[in-house]
Figure 1 (cartoon, rainbow, N blue to C red):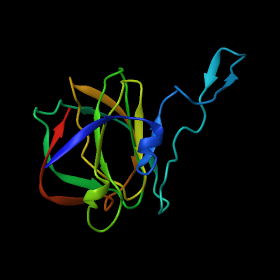
Figure 2: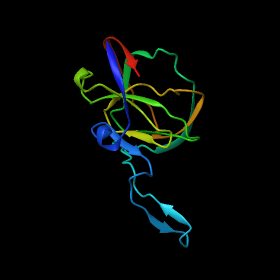
Figure 3: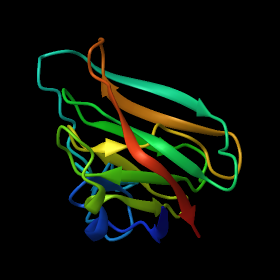
Length: 160
């Protein structure tokens, strides 16, 4: 199967989570007017009182052509990834459910100034870099038992 890659926008990604970016968002000034604060850009969801963790994930680039057959989801929390050095990355998502709803499967590419925050239970491909090794600021839930892996019925190939 083939899946066409789309440019990431807040509107297109809304069913799956939040796009974290300054473009198109309001801000207010703090620190004597020296800082623009783009406030509350994504929900951080944790359902069971566990700690929210801030981490850095260093990811290796994917192999091309990009072929995938596995997605994962996190039923107890949202999960956010923000590239730290302006690298573009690809995110593959599907709406939540016990099984992966293939009719909601989409692939997006960021512009290098965007991060994403997946809603609880949204299926997504495990994190990987696109063009080079990438450090991601990661915000998610601490503890175990928050990752379910699902197998697609057949492999998909990303079309650029």
